[in-house]
Length: 354
Image (cartoon, rainbow, N blue to C red; front, side, top):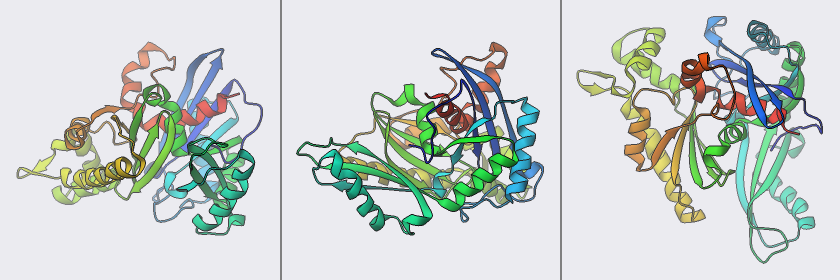
């Protein structure tokens, strides 16, 4: 589901993820059915600016388009990326997702019905957003209700990304919500059953239900990796940078006076996930079989085991590079960065689609 698209896609493409704390880029090439990693790169907002790229409270970018465009151009040059065809991700908390049911109807009737419902569900005028939709349950023309997933993005954000692409010397091929990139890069891990994708970013955690490869539900929780780091900083009276290092070294078991620092916050996330799972089972009659962890915090030491024990479902860390060819010398690097690059890689894969 993309906000804009073109009929022709190149055999090389760049995926770009402008997150809260990091800007990530991935360049891929396709030859036949083989996809190869050409280049990748990232830039931390704090390394050059005092502000983050964006915040949860503000849908638009915190920094000017010129600043972000300059930073992106620097990453592209540093990584040696020459491809100009780019797909950008849109943060899930800057997008609007909703689900609703329609009564049985024909394919011809659906468009008008969705537009009518869009007026009811989208909290701002439709003239100020670009929206798209897909059927997640049921088939037109049959005597069965249709479940619709509706996604909308403010036009203001689209204009920003177009400006940033131009400033960075890129051609904007498409814009897409983060979750669809995550699903695409995880396709071979989720296509056969109902899976919960928990994307732990810097600013927020998004809980998504993918049922046989299609997004069925998306819900954001206002706790992310930055808040975990802030908790460590306050508990140990150390700087944010020192706390980030400490968090990465010790992970979930990090404690002071035998009192866990991180698990209370993680438990809040797990409690919300449990509520979402109950709603899925009750309202949708879907039983998630596994959990996949993605995002910059997915590799936190001990998190995979803690989530599996807390939620009672087999839990894995997403591996978006598992079907991508890359030099063997990068194996350890790819393994450590893999969950954080799932979105940008998914965007690049979108750019390679015919």
